[in-house]
Length: 207
Image (spheres, rainbow, N blue to C red):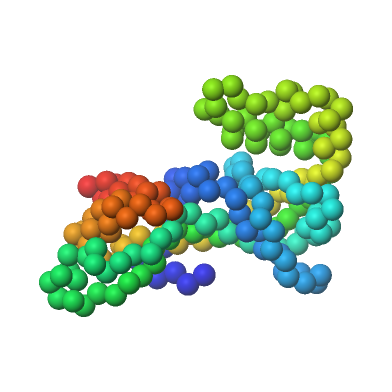
């Protein structure tokens, strides 16, 4: 991934924030069987990512393949009219702000029912947290759960390398960055509020 120094993110807490907030990854595999991309919610646990796919998914047969999991965070079009400098000099152009994380590693697959049940328990507990009445895997009839466990394959990715790019107007002066935050809040298209919040948190961390 092309990473100008201004946009390279290395802080583990920022990276983990994105993985938790946007867990649906584009899981990309390129090996002797060809090139494939699947979309899989993945949960980081230490130095591994874990999730599951349908057992009929060809990904379930690609044990030990090299993979890249791409996590797409907040993103939006940025109008140059939001920059104070545009009104002073006119020397500004549109751009696109976004945050992404690429996790490189090697795939391991498993059909172990105990591993799968532990994973599903952890996933549902994580995603159901905050619900008025959190759903638990034990809420489903046991025979139904066992049948579904037989229809999925677990995937685990041992993390070898992480690249993170947060392109959030860091190459602009503070007044322009704040102008983008305010512009996003006023426009309020899908995703604008999320991107504005991420940019605002980063601005606060600078002070």
